[in-house]
Amino acid sequence: MSKLPTVAIIGRPNTGKSTLFNRLIGSRRAIVSNVPGTTRDLLSQRIDGDNVSYLLLDTGGIGATRDKDFEKDVAGQSLLAIENADVILFTVNGKEPITKDDLTIVSILRKKRKRHVPVIVLITKADTPEMEDSIIHDYHDVNIGERMMPVSAPHLIGIDELSEAIEEELLKLHFEKSDDESTDVPIPRIAIVGRPNVGKSSIVNALMAPSLREINPILVSPIAGTTRDSIDTLVHYHDQPYMLVDTAGLRKRARANEDEVERYSVMRTLSAVEGSDVVVLVIDASVMVTQQDKKIAALASESGKGLIIIVNKIDLLKGEARKQRLKDIETLLHFCRFAKFIPCSALTGEGLTKLFDVVEAVQLSRVRRISTRELQRWFQQVIHGEPIGQLTTCKHLTQAKDIPPTFVLFVRDPKRISISQLRFLENRFRETFGFDGTPIRWIMKATERKESYKSE
Image 1 (cartoon, rainbow, N blue to C red):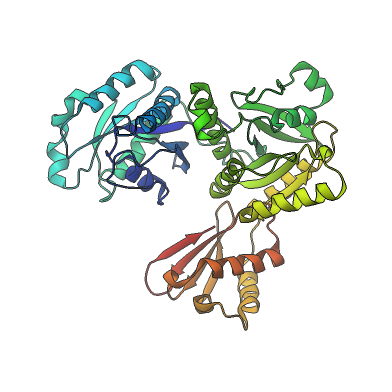
Image 2: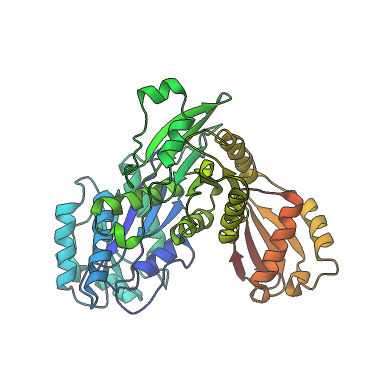
């Protein structure tokens, strides 16, 4: 698989970055607010364009806020995105005059971005054709980019043109469509993720052939955070190649912000997850599941990736203590029960070779298709005699050609379908068809008017 390029949206607070991000990805992930500085976390989403795929980043605003710690936090993330992006989208507010913060960002872009990286200046909130025609000449002071474009995300002004411009700039940089679409038998990419010091690199080392491991072992150390970047390692199991991507540990935000290198590690890990087929989350069996473990599992699920959870260092627990710890971990990660759990030990090798068989099964689940006739027959059997409200109004059920597996139900009123009803449906679905290791998406469409509802 070729490198997945990164496109970063940057700008001062309240210039419409999150609204633009939501429009480009086609859903509402970023929090949109009129309060400057609402976005603090670095959000990412893979976008598969017509000619090239890329990772879109939504950053916090660069500029003064009342919370100086907050300002330092988000500014650090934005600087990180600027230094590592392949294309930069610089937003300025079309309804306000140029500010000191805008000009500060212009200066940062000139100093910090890589020379070859194109900048597209976006004049946001250009909500009328009249604004679109007259606005550009008012913003010459910030025109440091390849082009300047008025856009309005809420009104869909300039969005299609922007999408085309992004792909044009990436193609100029010789990025191409991911090998996922062009290779007959693609090599599965497996992102090994987890908190620092849970044994990710030790697991990769243990999986490598002895001859290769002697030549090129990944540095393993008891000091948390040894791996600072994503490392690709090609391994073979039963003549099948697998690409293991060992990533830096994801720390809690407070610690990551103490060191710019840690922020870089977080971004590279997000990129590795988006560019992978299967995510292997490594958890330390000797400690309880943390909030950070849950966030990583949720990230993999929301990204639609296959998910395998390795419980490493299981050799430290024996008998009932081992059984209870595994039960506790599954309970705490109840929101991703579809994931496959593998207890193992990188030190002793226990359970490690099971990983490849599980990866193969998860890959098959991700691309598996169920015929419409079989789905219809199953659905009628499942809903018979069950109090599941509006789901009984479903007239048609089919599988979309998407990864992860996505199923479309045509119902009378999608807004009246509850999360509990979808959970019931998914539980019965997995009992019949399996689909282990992969999230499933449900899309509700109205039979009489065009509405949709989506859940994982």
